[in-house]
Image 1 (tube, rainbow, N blue to C red):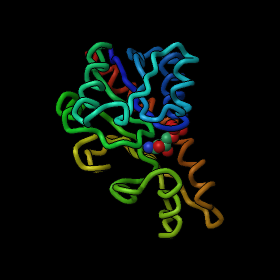
Image 2 (cartoon, rainbow, N blue to C red):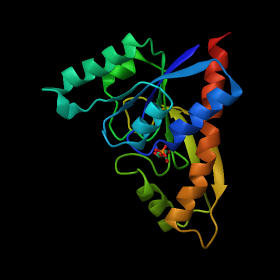
Image 3 (cartoon, rainbow, N blue to C red):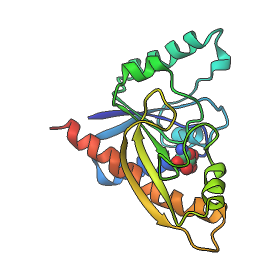
Image 4 (cartoon, protein in one colour):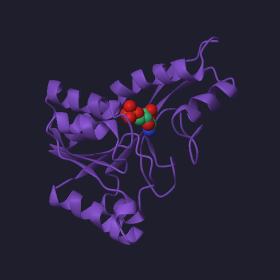
Length: 196
Ligand code: GRF
């Protein structure tokens, strides 16, 4: 059984898609906690509406980054978390967490990595850069998280075609739609593998 922690800083539509897939498809996974560095994150209120424990844990609440990282790890251990999904989490994951969950942390990124990833490549900025580069295709990538931003091993990608009249906003909507199918599909595979 995958005991998943979802880390999210924003609206939480990928978290919601994953939650719905687990409920509907009944694969061996449960989201045991949602963690956010943003007290206003839609993901936190969504989680509470599903009766999933939801914690706002921000570095600002702690004297040092080490104490913050310890708090995150403690929270995960206390809930028996064995898999972490980053779904719009806007903070770099600390090395201590990567060590504790090696190959058990995945992230979803709204472009075809290794292109259009790294520092500053988040949200609408990604789609603006893709349109500015006159790409014919974009898409979504799920990858393992390591100590280099958006550079961990790619697990799966889905492509979307870019039309000549696409804007960053219309492209964002297209990509988000494929993200909502991709993330649950990948997590389902991990969940089924964990049962074997
Ligand atoms: C998604 O586009 C995801 O790829 C990126 O952040 C966005 C999160 O959206 N990492 P949401 O909060 O899941 O709606």
